[in-house]
Length: 290
Image (cartoon, rainbow, N blue to C red; front, side):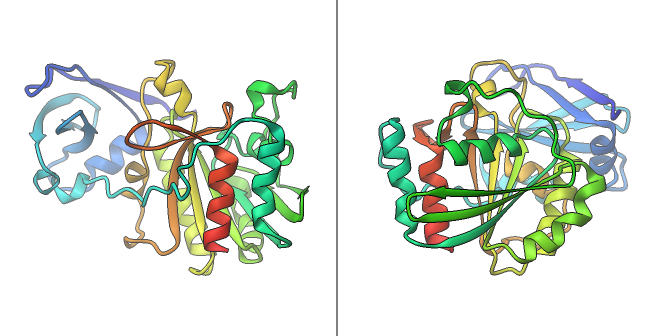
């Protein structure tokens, strides 16, 4: 079991906020080893500024600096997030009939989608949601168990047929992702935004990008935003966090990200936190990229 370092800070000089950073031992070491001084850095976005937290290899807080603009943030800790994707911001009702009509926009297309990502991110829940178009909070479906290997499901809604390949998230199964990704029309990479496994997310995402032909689009879904908004989770991972721990060259072609709650069946518009049906956003992504 990977242990987690909790780094508690003094109040922010700009706004007086206290921050708590939770990082795995492996991530602390990775950030410290990026320079010869043995000092790691982690950026936290406040309302109108960014706070850069510094710590040693034991996870001890050393101090911080304040950046008021993006140019003031050191390149080594800049969060270069993936492009945020909301194609259709039109608000729609939640009736099942309307959800089904959204899938008819795909016309008569047979698509294969690989759903990959670390364990317990919500991949199987996403497949069930796409199959029923009913979010877990409205269904009586029992909680799922981790997928072992690969689970294939055919989803038929209206004139559209989608083959979903739900891939096991344990690292032992990552080698199985390659043949599925190579024969897919699109990849959905799913991660738990409230977890501390940033290193694992970075490794898994880098594996997905290296397996695919760059023409195959990837939708990164950062799940469990609802827990963070309700104060039930202490942090929320953005795509820039794990990208900074990969060896991938940015920008990455045909890769976009959204912040969601699969449990609620909602995608959150990034600036206003407007709630948009998740199914609508996924269909819009498939329309545009496939």
